[in-house]
Image 1 (cartoon, each protein chain N blue to C red):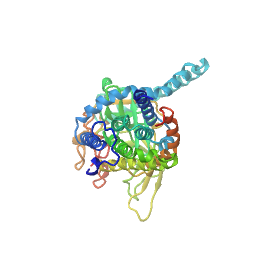
Image 2 (tube, chains in turn orange, brown):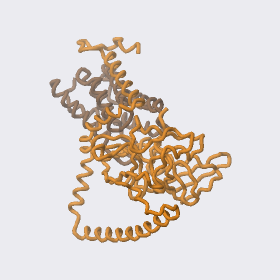
Image 3 (cartoon, rainbow over the protein chains, first blue to last red):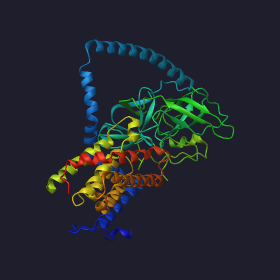
Image 4 (tube, rainbow over the protein chains, first blue to last red):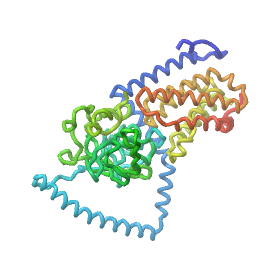
Length: 334
Length: 157
């Protein structure tokens, strides 16, 4: 930074230090911030404060859309509401019917596992949050939601909607949090194909309607239409949550790995309300704990323990060492 | 026009640009959305270099970091560097016609995006898509419009 102080166009009447000196100060400040945000965990606190300050603006930015929704819903006609009510009743009955069957199956499953008592429900409690900001640029797929630390949200909490897995919480502010979507290129999610229980990793593509499965061999048994569910490895998502459906498989003779694409089942672009879930760790389908993971994986993100600094850390994709052992969350910035 | 009125106009337009930069939009629009904040900060630091300056660039960039959830200090560094260039070259740039100014703005936006790209690379974020560069061209094309609109907020030199 030698040239910054030289006077090419120094103002005739100078006010304070030269721009070069001031820029150097700001640059050093930026570098310090970046270093802290990348390396040190306590920068979460700076972020926490800043996100509190940012919350009103986020609400304001989102308010035109919210006002429009409020207007359309408050002027909805009586007959439209009736129709919607009927539809919801119908849906409720269907779900109730399905639920009966699920309870029977769960009991049967428990008996098969010789756990003679009925299992506790998988979700301990859940929280409904509204999406107040969307970031869907090619390299960043994030959501801002209107629940934060005051509502009990914590880092690495899974986020789902009616269709399936949406993502997980990466930053928590007092009243808002940031969610990394499964389609974010920094996100990798251990999944399983329901048809043959083949396990692999689904990586975000950066586009809201596509997931990539880069670690499947050319000869692996996968075809278009296969449904992917979370495998429960990785310590964030429980087993069996719908993730996506294979939309295309391309095999080339001169390559070791097939090019597999999937489309997410959750409403990545359409969800306005999302659910944040807490799991009962005693349930067999709950996310695998650190000890259960195979060796070779990086330190695991234990749900509820905020470890992330500067994006989701603590979890790495390790292409070399058996893909199904690596855990969820994101690639570790190196 | 007085300094105080200028300052008010600067702060309001910058805030408005910040809101435009973080407004949720459909994906194809976010790709071509120009970096409004950079354009506005560039305008004010070339036209009123003794009122708007590095502090505006730094704070604006930091706000962008917070709203976008990017690495803290990333946009702050990129934007304050571009502001620094603008402060250094403001006399040169002001003397040019609008369309030539667009070229300078294009260069500034490229430098801005290049810095972000380098920082993203250093910190291990992915940088595979070329779509991130699209907004620089859009921003340069939009410069005459931005300059025209902002020109209404202050008396020409």
